[in-house]
Length: 108
Length: 114
Image 1: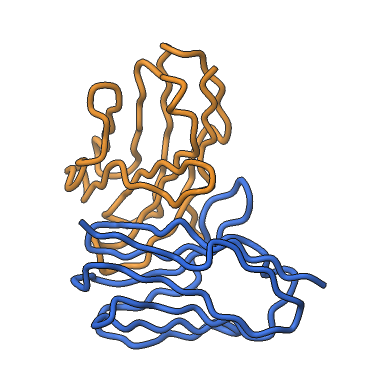
Image 2 (image 1 turned 90 degrees about the horizontal axis):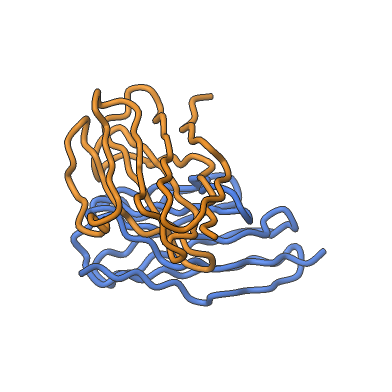
């Protein structure tokens, strides 16, 4: 059974700092890995999708990497802003499985 | 911009009553997912459709939950009877194809069972 773990559960940083969120999974037989953002009480917004054959994807200040062999993905956020405050979730596809997310607070 | 539509946004129901949620995926998306999300946790897959066929409902509590996607477009998730423990956010998502495509989510339905 696929298990997805996200560490840390919560993170607080000052504005402007670069940061890394971690996602690990137990079964490397995945189709892809997707990172989402969720604001309180809202649905999920897709940030980046990495296909199983890819190593990384970039969108603006976001960069996501994937290492299937070690069962790990990271989401790098550059020059964080207060508007980045949200819960970040990773999900693996094969059988769709989510981690419990990292709640990020960026302080002005 | 195409979106996944869900209704209602909020629902309060009494224990033992029936409740239904509706989802309209992005046009052309063959795969539709229903998830349940408890506060503080990640979404849990309840059921996955490919067109009108169920491809995974292993986590769906079939004694009280049912889901259908009759024409392979919109979908309905039903709970009967509702229990206090069903209080959660119910999320619908769609993608072009199972596994390979980017998944897009609706705004969800917040269910409170009293």
